[in-house]
Image 1 (cartoon, rainbow, N blue to C red):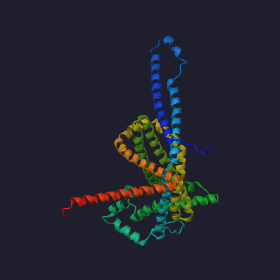
Image 2: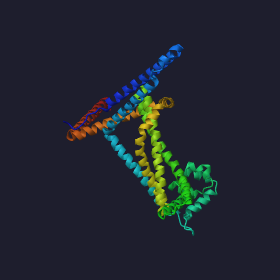
Image 3: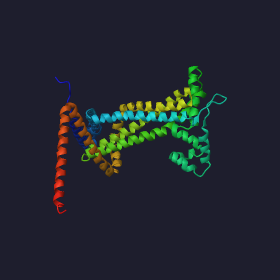
Image 4: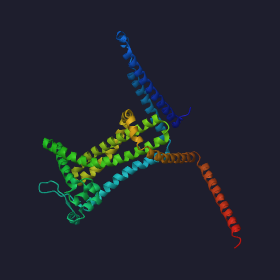
Length: 415
């Protein structure tokens, strides 16, 4: 008996599509039945109204059946996607790259922060009370003062980051904004969170935690989290919206002729994007707060680097948590499929055009997958096949060159 299971993902997807079609018919029928029953009861004479007391509610019963079948459709399509992903060798390579890409991005940020502090652009000495302060490198401080007192102040801040043109940064020195650009936080916020975190951790260690220390930690931690939340939500949201757009475009290419399936799949795409944004961002923000607090034990630089590492780890945890809540998000989105569809249809033209591109890419991926599998199954035969193809191409090219040569000799013979 073989130890392999042969499953056709396309057949599973066809079954899921058929199930959606049946679902829409069931919904229409139980709603019509409910309306007809309501009209019958309303028009019946009063003396016969008691005859309908034990009649079941087709709306409630129909809803229960549709909910059950809807969950089956979600599970069936998810199974098809799992098999399809397992068979997609190129997709696995992309996911591997994506994981290492996130790790590389985190490493790049941490390296940039270390270089900034290592070169002494911003330092965090302690004052007479043992609390941290900060000072910028002399050259950076002087340049900051010169620009802040010139007509180029607004331009310089805008070039550094458009967000620095907001009112809340109007009185913040340019040198502090340079620190924020590199380290993600203003130096004053880093110091406040470092001092409150160290005080709380030391209080826990010596069992001397009081309300003042806890309140300070919560206040500075909230601001620290809020600062991290802005960048995290923007990045995560942008990535998820982009992924959602590609998925919706693919749905238009695959299900454009099946409106019921299209509505459900687009709603799922929206639900998953929201779910991932909330889960990953939440994990990343919480991770930054915890990592920053632990890093504070070695000072403000440790707070910044700890927040970077914590944000990355928290994002990974959030990504795993998103998988656990994906089903709930999909069901909630399907319940709102009609308004979601109405909103998506507004951009239908763009999604359809993008869908054709996505479909072409998918066909290319399928072709590459087939070639890889054939090579793995019979590497020697595949090499010979490639060799024959090259020989044929060479013969064709030679034939074209010879033909062109004869043509030119004949046409230019008068020379």
